[in-house]
Length: 236
Image 1 (tube, rainbow, N blue to C red):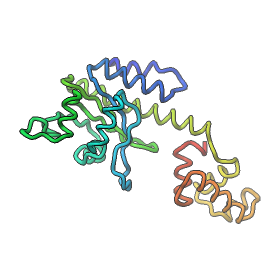
Image 2 (cartoon, rainbow, N blue to C red):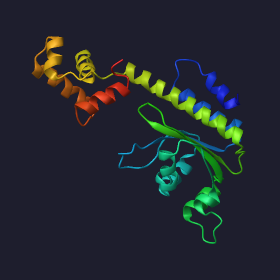
Image 3 (cartoon, helix red, strand yellow):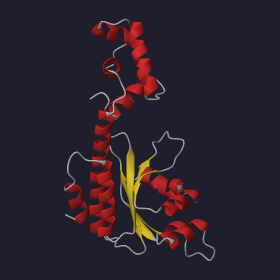
Image 4 (cartoon, one colour):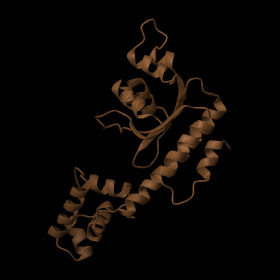
């Protein structure tokens, strides 16, 4: 087991985002990478089509440059991560043309920052988000055995992150008891009239509870509200 996986194993419960961010940074150092970050990936119906940073050891200047040059929505990387579950190994010349006679500003920026090669590790999970972990550096070890272990690390990291967020959401549940009850029965396919009969409420009152829950979560409709509440742990 690599040091990165060992670090995950030794995080004490309850897991927190702060602990996971520290382990992510330490895992990068253990393996000789200068840059590490975790991203959430857009769903297929997300019009933004851009990765969103979760944790990183990036400097504020590097993070601004990464976004300024549009690297958070770089089509080659984004398209690969969304469709291919396997690790994506890259180098700055192949991906960004850094050694061209007239390299792009983005390539120059990455080269100056020592961001010359790395691996992107996608995680497609049955949680409220999909994501990827990125390890990069000036000349890192990219052996197959290390990449395999880091991919296992990425799955463990995202599973623990989902659990930590789920528990935090559960503790900070904004829904009332009645709103949760109505959403639970709606999740089972019950109509407002049927929910009212079960809970001894009028159909109008049930609809009001569902509308209130939908508004609190900024959901687009009842189905969306049910899905969001379940994913966020509000119904547990």
